[in-house]
Length: 141
Length: 347
Ligand SMILES: [Zn+2]
Image (cartoon, rainbow over all chains, first blue to last red; front, side):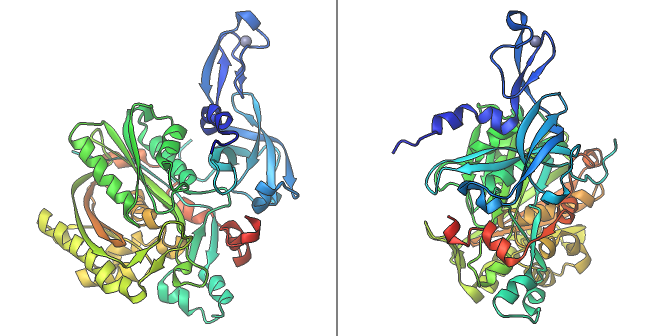
C-alpha cells in the first residue's frame, strides 16, 4: 500500500536531521529552512548549503497543555522560537527540561528526536528538537 | 593497531525507582530492588527510541574523536528494540551524523551483545583495510512485561564506538566469543514483551557463557586476572556481574567502577558498552581492561583493551557516563506507563 506523505518527509530529511539550511555568500545571511533566493541580494546573491551548529538561545516560548492526538503522550510540553547563534530563528520543541524551568534567553542545543508517527504501521518521522546545554565534566572554555 | 578512536554514550533523562515499581505490584518491603542490585532505571521519553539514542551516542563519539564522519566506511546498530521490524535503524543514524552515502550499513541482533558483535565486525573490516573507520553502536529501549521480574531492570541507553587504526585512545589486543543454542530469553515476532526461562537464565546461560568467554580470552592472551586493572561483565542486574567476578577470582574493586546497572538498570545492547565507556572516562593511560558482553540465546564476546595516552586529550569534549547518570528526573509509575505505551487507549 502506498503511504501518504512519504515523499514529503523524505525530501526534508537533511534539513530535519542536521538543521541543514543555506547561507548567502554575498551578504552572509543564514536561512533555515533553506531559501531558493536571498531576499536582500536577489540575483546578486550566492546561496550555499550550510549545516547549522545547533546552538542557540530561547527567544520566546509557550507551554502546550492541550495537544493534538499525536502529542498527547508528551503533555505538557514546550514549543519555542530558538534564535540560532548564526542569527536565524526556528520553531521547535524543547525537551529534557521541566516546562516551569524554561526561560527566555536559556542556552539550548539541538538533539535528535522522534517528531511523529504515521500511525502504528506508517513511517516514523525524526528530526531536531532542542534541549538545555548539558554539563560536560572536564570541559575547558 | 586496531582500537577505539572515539566513543560516546546516551542515557535518557527519566528514572523510575525500583521501589516504586514494586509498590504497584504489592511489595512495600524494598527487597526486590536490593536483591537485584538495581535501585533505579532509565526510562526513555515518549519521543525517544533506539534511532534517537543511537544518534545522540554517535554524535558524542564523533565529537570526541574529531574524525570526519565521511571517513566512516561501515555503520552497524546492535539492538533488540529497533523501531522498525523492516527498515534499518543504521540508515537513519548515518544520515543524521553526516556520513557519506558510499558506505555499508546494517542492523545487528543478538539480544544484549549485538553492539559488541558490531565492534568485532568493524574491527575485522578495519584490520583487513576494507574501511578506514567503523562505527559500532549498542542501543536499546528494553521492555519488561508489567509485573514481570524484567520490569525492574529493563532500561534504555546506548553507546557508540568508533573503531579505527589512527591514534586510538585505547587499543583492542584481542577478542574471542563463545556461542551455543541456549533458549534462556526470547521474543517472537509481533510480541510486545520478551519471555524468559526464569531460573534457566543464570547457571546454564549467563554464567556459563560469560565464564567460558573469559577463560578463553585469558588463555588466548596468556594473561590472568592480575594483569588487568578493570573488569566489565554484562549487567542484566547488579547481582550477576558480581557473582561472575567472584567465580573468576576478580577483586571487587576492579569491577566496582563498571556497575552502572545500579543507577540506570540493564540497557541491554548498551549495558557492557556503557560500562566500558565509564571505565574509559576514568582510566589512566596504560590501564588494562577486560570486558565480557553477554547476549541471550546465547553467546559472549570478550575483549582485552589497553588505554593509550591519547585518551587524556579526548576528555572534556562530550558528557561522560556520570554526567548522563546525574542528569535525571524521577517519574512515577503512571508517567512511566504513559511514556512506555503501557496505556493502550492512548495508542
Ligand atoms: Zn544575500
